[in-house]
Length: 327
Image (tube, rainbow, N blue to C red):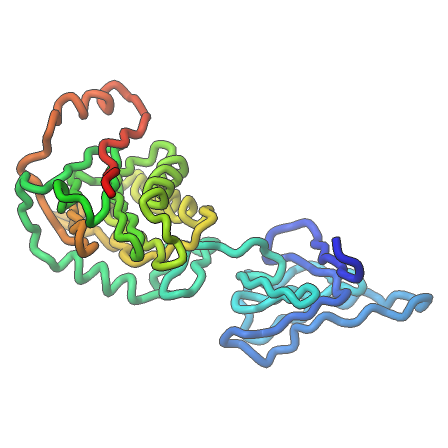
C-alpha cells in the first residue's frame, strides 16, 4: 500500500446503508441530482471531543431505498445514490451507492443497470427496451429451411463467426418458459446462441461468454451485446425466475455486456381466451449481420431424437454442439 493513502471502511449492512470514513475521501455528484451536498464532514481536531451523533436528514429527491434509517456515527458521511462518484486518493469509482465495488458490467445504452429493483423498473428506466420488444413481436415468423442452418436445442449452445462458410443462420424454437440468448461480439462478429431452461444458468452464461471471447481475440475493438427472448407470464413464475437469473449472471461477469434486446416474460406475453401464451417461441440469428428475427424451423436436425434424449433423462450437461475453428 502506498504511503499517505487511507482506504475507506464501510459499516455492515446492505449496500444502500454504506458509510465511508471521510479521510481524504470526497463525493462528487455527477448524476441528474447534481448540486446536492453529499460531501463528508471533516474529522474533528485531534484531542477534541467527538460531536454527538447527528440524525440522518432525508436527501432531496433521493430514492427512499437509499436513505438510511439509523443514526450516523461520529465522523461518518451519509451515503449517496445512483450517479454518485467516490474518489479515493484521486481514483474514481462509480456505482449505485458510493460504497459499492466493483462496477457492475450490465449496461443499456451505456448506463449501468440497477438489478436491486424489480424487472418492471428496468423497463421504466429504459423504455427503448420495450420499444425494441414491440418491433420484434410485430414481425411475422419466417420459416427457415435447413440450408445454412445450425439448429440449437434445449441445453445446447453453438458459436461461430462470419468467416464460417457452412453456417449462416443460428436458430432455436419451442421456448415457452425457456429463454433464447444470443451473445455477439461486434468487433469480431463471433456469435453464440443458447437455449436456456433455468438449470445452472450462471454456468451456462460463463460458457457462452468464454466461447465468444475465444473467437474474439481483438477485444480492444467492439463490445459484447446480448439479446434475451422468451418466456411469458406463467402461473408458476418460472419465466420471471429465469429472467432474473440471466440478468444476474451477465451482471456478475468481468466483462461489460450491453443489453440490446429484452423481449422476455411480460414483454413476450399475450392472452388468448384468458390464457397466457408467449408471442415468440423461436428466433434466428444471421451470422453475417447479427440480425435477430422471429422464426420457425420445420427441420430441427440433425439427429433430433438423439439430441433430445438427454433432456428426457434429466441430464443437465450443456452440449457445445458447434464452434467454428477456421482461420
